[in-house]
Length: 96
Image (cartoon, rainbow, N blue to C red; front, side, top):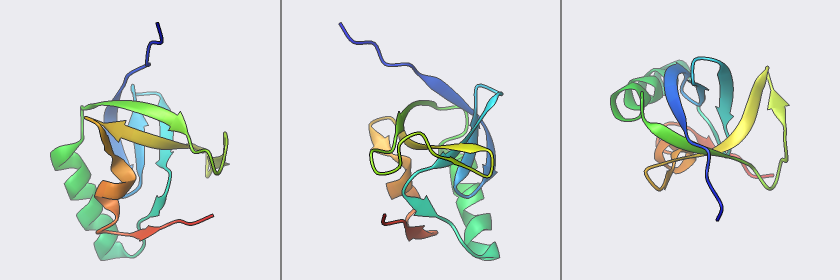
């Protein structure tokens, strides 16, 4: 039987970065929120809909165990939804 580790979003760092379990900084793989207004809107959206939610974290198969600005790049899934997809309205998709 395979068990999935669950984490809790404990802080929204910016539009495409979160903190989980009050210790680990995560850069959400697949999206880059750019521009002051887009970032502000994305932060508000994340706080309203995803703060304190349980999430699963996975290495992005295109990037492996990459670290950007001290944040681990991860695919973040909450309630069966890929958070990068939820943020595309505020940013741009990253294609590698």
